[in-house]
Every structure is written in C-alpha cells, then in structure tokens.
Length: 222
Image (tube, rainbow, N blue to C red; front, side):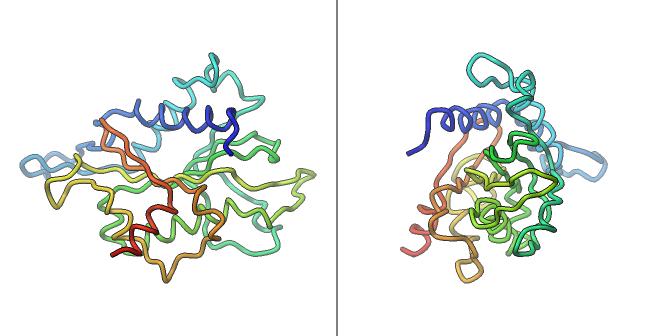
C-alpha cells in the first residue's frame, strides 16, 4: 500500500508536469531550417522547465518544495558516485531527474527518465534501456555506506515520454508507444518492481500514465 506521504510526493510530480506548457515540448530553433509546421524538439528544455516547475511552483502540503530542502531536494542528472561502491557495477550513468532527501539517502523518493517519442522511435533500444535504468535505482539489494551515508533504493521510477496529440495519426502520441517499443528480451527489471515503474505520456496539455506491469501485460496479449 502506498503511504499518504508518498501519494502526495507522486502527485507533486504529476502537477509539475501539467505546468510544463506546450512550448517546451515543441520548441522551434533555427527557423530557416523549419518547413511548414514542423518543430525541432529540444528534450533538455523540457527537462529544465520540469525541474523549475517541480522545485519552484509545486507544493507538498502548503509549502513549496524549494522551501523544504531540509527534507526534499530535486536534482537533474545527479552524480551518483556511490555506484563505485555498490556490489554490482552500473552501466546506466546518471538519471535525468530525482527527488530525494539530499544527504539523507534513506529517503530516495522518485527517479525519472525523459524521452521524446521521436527519440524512442529512432533509437529502438532507448526505452528499454531507460526502463532498466529505473529498475536499477529501485533495487533494494545494493545498500552501501558511502561517505558515512547509508544509501537506499528509490521508491518509484517514472519514464516520461513527450509528443504530439492523442490518437488519429502516425505522429501522434498513444499508449501503444510504450508496448510497441519495449523489448521484453532485453528487459532487466525485477518483476517485483513492475508496479513501481510508471510510464507517463504528456503532450503539453493532457497527461496519461500506466504501470509498467500493465504495459507488459498489454504487450504479451499481442
């Protein structure tokens, strides 16, 4: 059962996502290279805006997160030096964004990976690789003492895919973008964690989500 505190923390991420406007998903640059209504997507711009909205404009209870840094800290591409100390080496690098308790790593809450739909389609392994990365950070068997701190696993992993409107065309973002691009033969996540990884679709206006567990079940039905 999810605690009420954890529900509030997860809701803070959803609220922050909904505050990231469409401009940060379809950001046009180098206009002389743009034809018709095509847009060059800048993935990092979306991540920066999400970081800002989550930290500055989102509350837990009635308090903005940026005023609670004694309890909650958001980091982008956090450097996880403890990886050198864990019992199993990681090839996953740094997560895109995390919400944690700072030096109190007994309290690691949310770890995020962010991809646009076009990236997932053009790099056929990227979705599965990022899901595996989330699964790594959820692992509860990598406890270690690093610089005097006891590091523990994150509670939830979020894979956030951004793209265009729902349904109706090849370019549109749709729930099957998860199941179609997930490679089960390369999935390296403990089954116990399937319900702790949330797959999110966001188009700048509406948000949809599903548990990895349900995405896998949908894929297996095909």
